[in-house]
Image 1: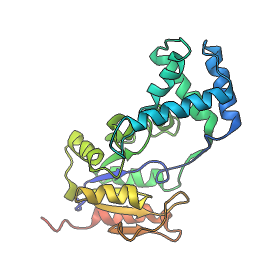
Image 2 (image 1 turned 180 degrees about the vertical axis):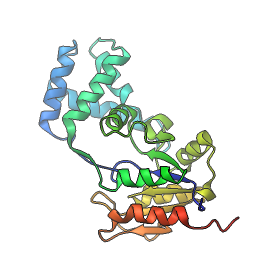
Image 3 (image 1 turned 90 degrees about the vertical axis):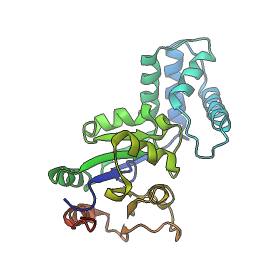
Image 4 (image 1 turned 180 degrees about the horizontal axis):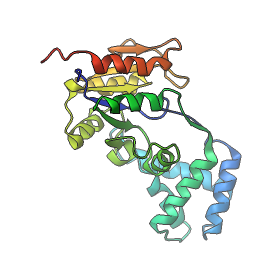
Length: 248
């Protein structure tokens, strides 16, 4: 096996092509109808304002600028504000309704399954490290057929912190017994994915997709697929898998 034995992927914009719109009036109308059906009477406008206020309050509760709130708690608090005590199932179903109503596109990129299959065929590990809400992402992984694709994963809502913090990367490494020299991060955001990898001394692959941020000379990956070359990811991964380990 080559130098890299653990491949850590970002999710949205890297493996999954997604577009959401939380500004859509129809989202808030549908969400308000759902809340009302479960005893929490909100208008669409009132629900949106209460949701944003709770999110803002949660973010301000921590001095860490990379703190990640847990949206499940926000949905639960929205019910509590209307004197409804929700159980875990209702909170999960509310989050799912909210996500479905706000999603405009959700699909795998064409390179996703070939890349994962290739890594598996060489006996290497596949991991997920994503700035994402568990209440949204876990159902989406299931819907996309990726629920069994990873040997381990850490989502920012579970960690309470998001990339590029070294803390979230270190949590993934610690929980799965991974070492930075034999691991590599693959993502579509320089300031998030590449920065998080470099923060712990790990190499990175940057792939440019439609939702990638702008160029940042401070975060250049060891391997880059830009200018429409994202489809070459499986080819690059094969090269990384077969390259000899110079440390041996």
